[in-house]
Amino acid sequence: MLSLWRRHERKCPKRSKGRNWIKCQCPIWCDGDIDGKRVRQSMNTRDWARATRNLARIEDPAYGLRECAQPGCTELVARGRCPRHTRAISAAIESYHSAHQDASWGTRTSRKATLRNLEAFLVGRGTATVDQVDLEALNAFRSVRGIGARTWTKELGTLRHFFRFCLDNEWILRSWADKVQMPKNLKPADREPYEPNEVAKIIAACDAIGRSAYERLRARAMVLLLRYTALRISDVAALEKDRVRNGEIFVRTTKNGKPVRLPVHAALQAALDILPIPRGAGNDAQCRYFFWSGNGGTQAAIRDARRTLEAVYAASGVEGACSHRFRHTLATEILEMGGTFEEAADILGDTEAIVRKHYAKWSVGRQARISDLLARIWHAKKCGVQVQENQSDKVVDLVRFELTTSSMPWKRAPNCATGPRTCLLSIS
Image (cartoon, rainbow, N blue to C red; front, side):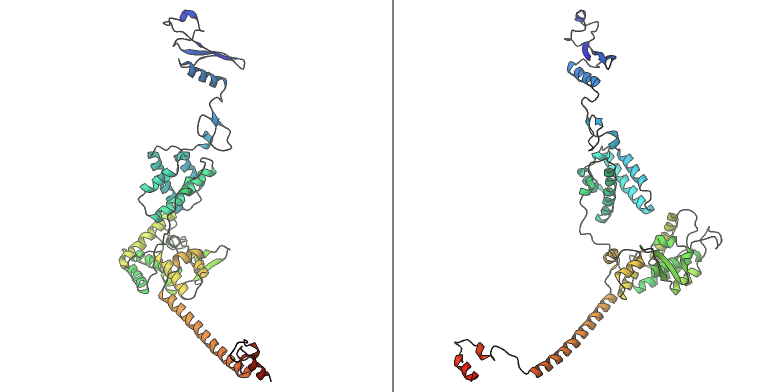
């Protein structure tokens, strides 16, 4: 049990009355025993009420504390959350990136950019921990981002994924990012398929770039791969030689584990046969790839391939030319020839829903096929109707007449002009 007393100063006029005199402004001390241990220390105050509260904290360490704000946590804190359930914004972002290292390079880069902008914004607002982020802060973050609705959709997806990660780790009570409204009525980016003359211009432009035949032959092979296989530019840049054999190119493996192979077009095969060895790859036997030497990272190879194709598109003069339009071109041709969405999805490596949403472009070929289909349906129905009419005529000839109310006198009303008498006469 501890007791408070004042330790009188030398200049205190009441010093002679002893430590029990408390009606002065001398420093307050405590003295006594706690669990058999002598305690004698200063209260660091001259105010009696504050000294009483400090004394209670010494006698009971849980005095004035409350449980952590995280449900289920029994750790006592002065306010808010315990250290286990509190994370600084920078620490939470670092933990998030460490936990998702298996994502692709492009996904990781996009996430880092989005969360870097979020961290800079929140630090500027004086927000220190993730549990302090609320809906108002996220809406304010959207207002300062000078990006379009489609880009914000991607960033909002990253934010939702990040705050769900924080929620799973019990650093926050709820994910306010789920409450942020997602942009609505967004139309897919309009990517029209190439016309045949535009493809011819792009292929011809391959001979107008670079300083030597090395760059031109590589550009021509890349363009023909995009044209006849609809591969993504990342797949083209790192395409291995053993994926092309026996007149077929291995595209990808479907979800059920079965390989998907496409026939190699004659022009594409000729371009691959004369393709020079990538610089820095040594001899042909040591190089496994068509366009990449194998040195460095794949991102550098993809960057070089993208720069080469951008030079080709600029030289072609085709408006809006890009690599992704080749995927739209091949998907449109597949659907024009009567291919199903499932077949187009297998070739492109996407789902049927994605093909329907982004690649099902209306074209003259599809219109002609649908018109021919309807014409054949109408012709078949017309022939069927004529046959049915001929059959009904034969039935009428055999039956000769059809019983109706007018031909049945006994069914006539009594007040009819002919009346029952006519019925009797007809019966007799």
